[in-house]
Amino acid sequence: MMANMSLLKNEMPHQDAEIRRNNWEEVALGYSYETAIDEAKRCLNCKHKPCVEGCPVSVDIPGFISKLLEDDLDGANEIIKRTNTLPAVCGRVCPQEIQCEAKCVRGIKGEPVAIGRLERFVADNAGEPSKVNTISEETFKKRVAVIGSGPAGLTCAGSLSNMGYDVTIFEALHTPGGVLVYGIPEFRLPKSIVKKEIDLLIESGVNIELNKVIGRIKTLDELFSEGYAAIFISTGAGLPQFMGIEGEDAVGVYSANEFLTRVNLMKAYDERYITPVNIGNRVAVIGGGNVAMDSARCAKRFGVDEVMIIYRRSEDEMPARKEEIEHAKEEGIKFLVLTNPTKIITDTNGLITSIECVRMELGEADDSGRRRPHVVKGSEFTMKMDNVIMAIGTSPNPLLSEITPGLDVDRRGCIVTEENMRTSMEGVWAGGDAVTGSATVILAMGAGRTAATDIDRYLRLK
Image (cartoon, rainbow, N blue to C red; front, top):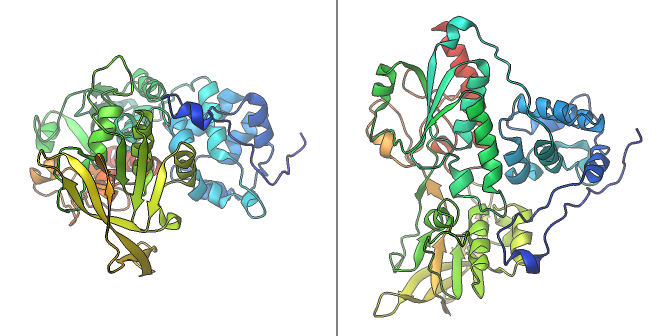
């Protein structure tokens, strides 16, 4: 088969911006079979597989692409699922450009192979691989509790279930999926995709108990007393952060968590539901990450005339994926960079009328490697505004750690772990945003997989 030596990736087809900003359907439409094969031909099938080094869950990327080229979609999916429990999710939301694709040899003199788009194509079009247990009957009887059903918890549970363990996930909310269902909008990650992946985990033997807030209904010690031999904590980072500025407690100020939870988990995007999302015609979103982009793009889809992202650094320093920034611009989102709010101004009824901001300039790099912003003296100005959405980060909910003596956390409230994701408590592991603070889906999945491997090692010796 002749290789494709084009320096450019095959473009991903999208809904037109003028159409998509008025609906909630998926923006990226996916490769056709012909396009996927053409893109797969760009892979050089490198023997040293540098792309795999960039994958937090170590997917055999050249291996699955080779199967795709053989027209063996099921074989390709089998290879992906050996290490990636949620390929349809990862193919949509992982930042491949700074991970696997950043290591691709084709990227040296052109664009890398579109690995994420190929992973999505395989996951969307292949059948499901068979489950293969790799554990003895004696060890099979051991039970593992997973607290939280986000990407880390689902990955850990799926990996352990495939090994043969009896796994139960305890989820605080009424729907499993964690940030995949409450945080990421329908137009980026359809809920049907998440449900399909979770249904497959349930079919494989994973038990999921909903509306179970561990830390309220049960302690970790009580889980151990009920016969669980190991516990994995993956409770995420659902505690929103605020700036601490005047007026931040006004009616009309949302945390991004609350706003996106109303939109996604409570289905405000679906006209059949009556979930209230009260926003005016001028909405400011504070922050520059993917959550800020998601919040702004959701607000636009509610018919808001002017949505503005306000970010204290320049666009080059924005942590959001470039693709998400481009999509936001195409949909009419305005960007006001090197700017920071200092006050939210309200009327006598407590309703927002405007926000006061200052201009910023960049100085030396800080610990994150980005240049530190400084206030430009005398640059204050005011803008009319109806609502403000704070999307400046989240931290772990302290509920579980506060009632669990012996579970070490750092000054941010993140659970402290070793490289193998073991915590300070015997028989307890943790991973995902509960350990790192707000991070990517794939990094959480990598932590879940690492923990599952070590839990297996631990239980075999116990």
